[in-house]
Image 1 (cartoon, rainbow, N blue to C red):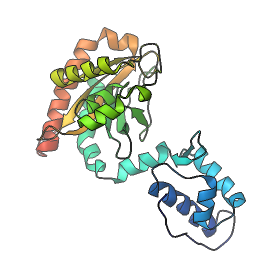
Image 2: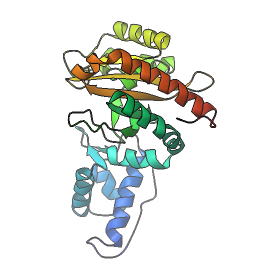
Image 3: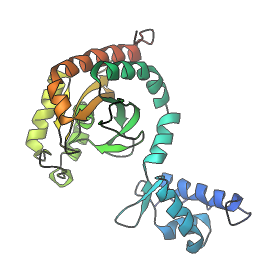
Image 4: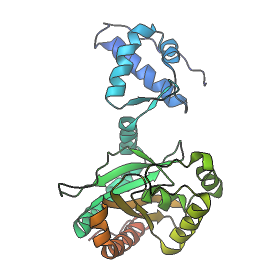
Length: 269
């Protein structure tokens, strides 16, 4: 674990400056360590007894700022990644992409999501969304992270990722089955990634969430490197009924969005 200077604060023990200082110390230590931290490590770093941190850590977990792993270590959860997505360089991507996402949602009637590769793990992170108003719909939270091998967005991004990352993600030990349609064969997944590179679109049928289908297209830079991906997702029956039209709309929109990212004078119209 990376060694860091303990953070000391003073003040009231309730919701005052001392609690704020301890919360910042907790977040600081977790941010500095990819595998998170135990309660004992957090207490030592914050220069506070474990008993005084239990309530703060519990509140951070309840607010989805932290998540407790099976190992007992605390890591960041979706709330923190949502904040990061909004203040990172991805903010410009969100600003440029939003009109395109809205247009695509209106054209398809399904939820549209923008995502990028996570910087600290072999995952994708959702950085923006435009949800359909249909009462039955696919819904996600900005900041959520998903696997690369069993989601449309993940496959679209993984297909254009470095070989070392593809090999790592497709290691048999990492391929967990979520539903009866989850593909867990490394050979079959490699074939899918080749098809995605050839066709420009990734498809899934209830692989991560039962009853939900998705399709995603990558956004590439001028050198063919991955920037992000755009996902359309919805109930399997609705997606199946309109798949051809939705795929056409997705490819047209992502082509225009990619041009807008490379040439900022282009707009969604």
